[in-house]
Length: 173
Image 1 (cartoon, rainbow, N blue to C red):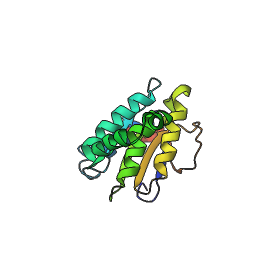
Image 2 (image 1 turned 90 degrees about the vertical axis):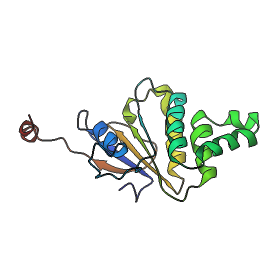
Image 3 (image 1 turned 30 degrees about the vertical axis):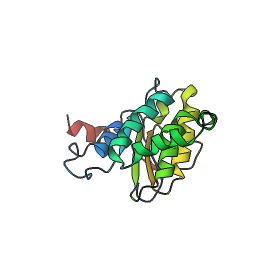
Image 4 (image 1 turned 90 degrees about the horizontal axis):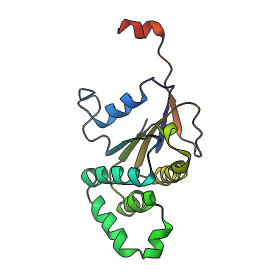
């Protein structure tokens, strides 16, 4: 589904395996090559303590390693925009969104954000603004996980993961 939709939201109750799913997308060794190597260019496990600065730093470092030209696009943005223009941008826009927008990669760029429901109210506005901006980029594919009660300001494609039946879980114990 991530090929068809710029923003896919995987929704499930706590303990249903959203974080395991996210990890499996980013680390092919976990899935024994079911997910191809390089399928995801960046992943971040969100917490109540996640700040926009931390998210920008984490995702930016990963994109610099995985997306050719990304680091150069970050530097070019810093050199071509005035301090005033840069201050108008949030940290996520400055470090992630705008460099990707200027780069326009030929291949899909996938970012996984696990645990959107855990982001603090103080950080949620910046995080959602970045998600909305990234989802508008033609080459972007975002996979975001959250619990069912998470409010979302955009309209993602939603994939609901049902709770496993107790009998199914007992088979694995």
